[in-house]
Image (cartoon, rainbow, N blue to C red; front, side):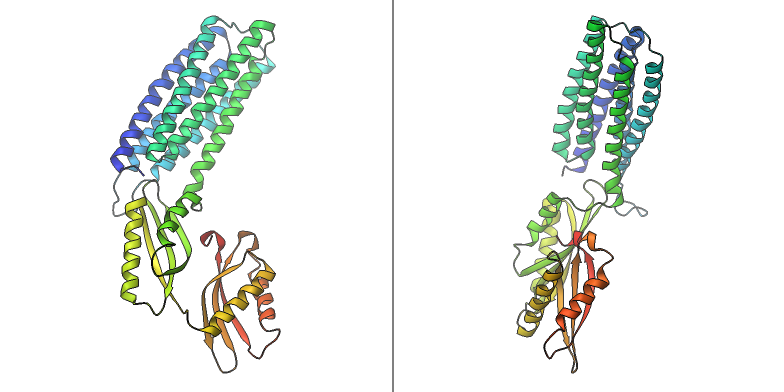
Length: 376
């Protein structure tokens, strides 16, 4: 993850380049669209205007995201980058809807379109600029780890396709006389709407608290799984407050016989290394586990075997045993797949039945069901 000042500088540069480029393309296309009477070219021009507006919002989002943490927002303001993406999506959807309406009118009441070499030149030039913008934003987005700039790169790539469709429409009319300008304008408008929906989905998801992606999970787990004294781990939870503002917690299992001061030092080092390597604020919960009790180990293996017959995806952690004169309590957590939510009572009932089918020991289970998303 890039440093704060590097992100701001890169975001500012990308925003300014986007504003200048898209305003120039808007002016050129609006001029030729008005001269030729082409609604599809005008629609493409409005798409560039929306891109320029998006760059303004992106620029503002990067600036606000760099505000330091304060008393009311102790986790900082990095989510402004996500909010700017959502604002861009709403703007794109509005423009796409308005363009769709004007295109339908043009389909119902078609008018002649004048397609000239000037028009073709402007569209080809626009495709070249948008292709360059796509490459520019993709490289910059990868450099600083910005989903916003990567989305902007994808949008520029899509614009190349949309403008190509408009160019194809004009060429067909020039060669055959077929007036498909309204249909092509509608196609461009629908493409804009599709892009807006996709961008809205991508920006809303982290705001709602999406699960950590595979790459982020591996970054954290790589710090944990090979550490000394760590026997296992579970309950990884990641809270995303924006780029560079990620907080995570995880439980690690260590032998209860190990020196607690040594375990504490290992955990402190893991938390520090995770932040220094990946910029993730990690909090580790220490779970001491019993490793030298044959009866407990046998009971755990029995529970795992019975769970496998119920659903092979079910796993357990935090396994403990409390013995009483008349029965034995088995206390543990089960990682529950999302599609089994609501079936907790049924799973517990079936497991209890299997555990007490035979044998002289009566088992009572005390189960906590955790989302599998935290225990993959």
